[in-house]
Amino acid sequence: MKVLPWILVGVSIGLLAFFALNEPNPQYATGSEDVEDAAGKASQWGSKQRASGLGHNVVGKVKEGFGGATGNNDLAVEGATERVVGVVKDVAGQTAHAVGKTLHELNR
Image 1 (cartoon, rainbow, N blue to C red):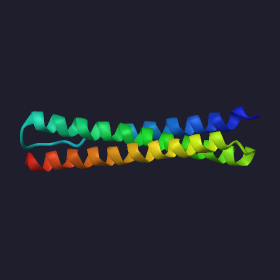
Image 2: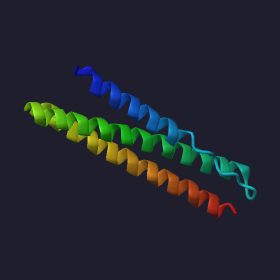
Image 3: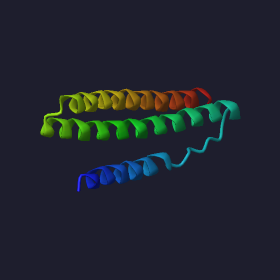
Image 4: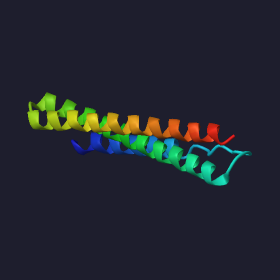
């Protein structure tokens, strides 16, 4: 019965990543195609990082919760570390989205 929560977490992360990574690409009508390709790639990379960060954050919270509930301090610390990695990846993804939008705006 201990496997079921991990399966549910995995399925949830998979669904969130699917919806986050399948967002439509914006259509651009002006400027250089190379710059627009760079903007699109930056936004796509940002989406992947944000989904990965969300996954790390969720897994970290689960590990931290299980570690705290069972008295396993090593697992709780590992979960807290995983959450920090998730936050860093999410911030990197947000930055990449901002770079993509800035490149697009400068290319008009």
